[in-house]
Image (cartoon, rainbow, N blue to C red):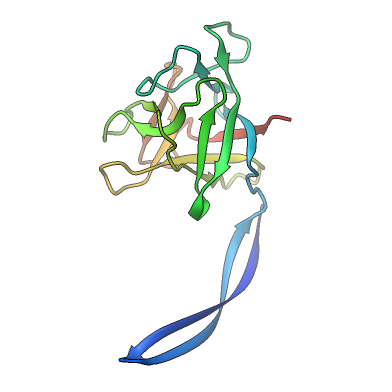
Length: 178
């Protein structure tokens, strides 16, 4: 659910040499009431209900995988710490491995998302579904100046990237861990 907000913005600009002009504008914009608070979350794919999981054996450069909570594996962890950065971006860090979500294996669509050793700024774009906590996850552009989004590949149990924000399997649900 989004609601319209208004904000007064004062702009000061230099018009000619040292002559400055100040203007006050009323700017309208939409804000989402689905704000993300810092804390621990599980990240579940809306289509498959699989969770992003980190494993005790994961290292930087390994593929980010998904798993259902019922499956047994090499010490999977579903909890991630989400911390805000500037500009509405966040870091997403595995509690188990301290690895970060946010780099792609290449520039093509469909390449895997990889674990990063250093924090990477990701964005959570609210889905236009009217349901709280549904997001597309946008990663840093890398060598291409285009936006790229995470989705779960069909039957692969891995997270991949695409330029299509509406890619099937591209909506993620943030579940707060208390």
